[in-house]
Length: 78
Image (cartoon, rainbow, N blue to C red; front, side, top):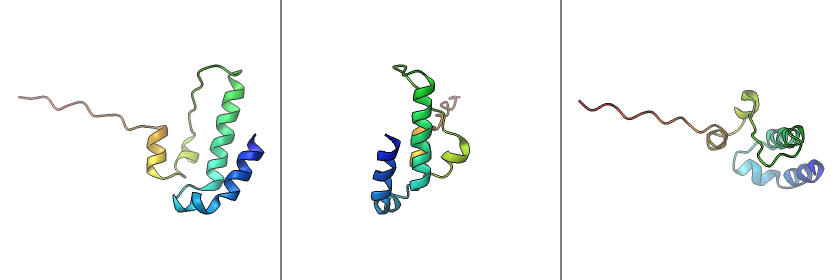
């Protein structure tokens, strides 16, 4: 499966570059997700904590997808 995904990413490298998605980091993310899935013995719910060093290689919208900003509580009214 990862070989097929790698081939896809390489074949669409220009499209990935156009949207500022680093192809090599994308493959590392896919491998991490697959490894996590296997480690959980195919559980129906799998969480993925993307390592900081990998996450910072992606543009902000991708980072926000994996780590949404925590909303600030509303200011107290006086």
